Length: 253
Image 1 (cartoon, rainbow, N blue to C red):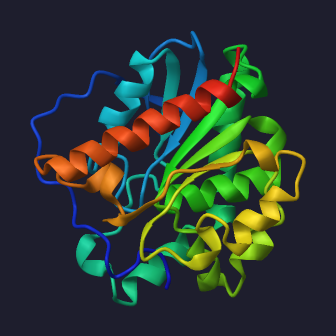
Image 2: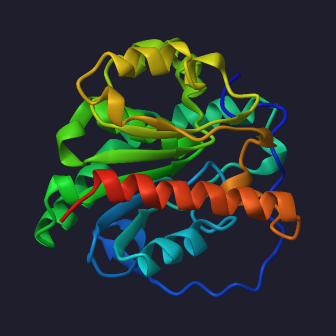
């Protein structure tokens, strides 16, 4: 597996939703931002289909309504993976193009922006989708002191395999509490009571890690699932409610 399991859902159908936030630039880095930091800030990291796809901006807007300043950097700088690329050599090529060294300098720009807004690390959370979860784990390993906790929807930590590395080795380097929301087809390491979970449980923050499993739902459903289907809509609400609760316990002003 290079990223998404074969059982993943398709892209979200077109929507007439109008994003409530605004586009802004941090140097050359395009970002979507919205909200005031009444409860803290959340850095949102999109899936491989890009910040303009699915419900990424709508979810940012929901977080803002809950009292968070939200910023979603376009770490691919306008690039994205096409749905037709899944299962082809184009997908691993895309993943290798956007290796950690390609986007981590942009994350440092985001951290500086939040520091300039007088937001302490304890008041900053992250939320990722698919590839975005892999990015969160790497940021936790690299600069875990920069944020408080991470929310992981349909985590594609299996991307480690593209680089010849193991999920559990990355789990051992994670420094922050994580909410994991695995779906159908995710590797065993990222499931509740899987090897990655057991590694984190041994850490001083282990008891703060949580799981909300969606093993009957397709990978990608939170950001890309068809909300006209009640089961999908209900589970998206469950996932986002769980994320808000987790952030409330681990992110504070």
